[in-house]
Length: 223
Image (cartoon, rainbow, N blue to C red; front, top):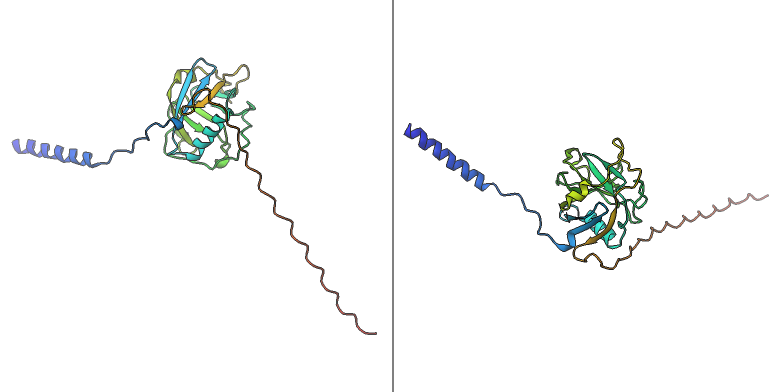
């Protein structure tokens, strides 16, 4: 019996050593004020989102740029489904609009769509995210690696929970939707001056192809 106990203790020590040798998961980067997004909502408070440029750099840069331009100020939550998510970022308030900037390439990553995760909305095509995003009310694993998650609410989730719900089927909010009052980046401060968007010029159309020179006439036979 003593030998058995010693054998089990040895196994336990070996198992502990094996576990200790497993490298821990890489922690998220330390919060940078450039990557902290503040949303003042009409539901009565402020929501703070830690954005993750290490997972979705282009998406974070797009949201940061639009926030600094004041693009999101006054924009409504046009699609809100109980137990799923609240979507915003469309100045038309219909889900069909976006910013004048080009659509983004998908940045699907390993951030799971947990409660409070913020992710880019898109059409059924992967490279169509632009300005719209949504905040998850509940974990929604079916979205993982299919939508670009770029951040997560770190405080003020109760104000997200208070967003007015829409139709239970399509989520559209018909009357008096909740809205974003103002958005800012923590590094800038709430009352920082807005920075106008720089709209890239459309690509110049290629010049028309030159018409081919007429073929020389065949020599006429002598009479």
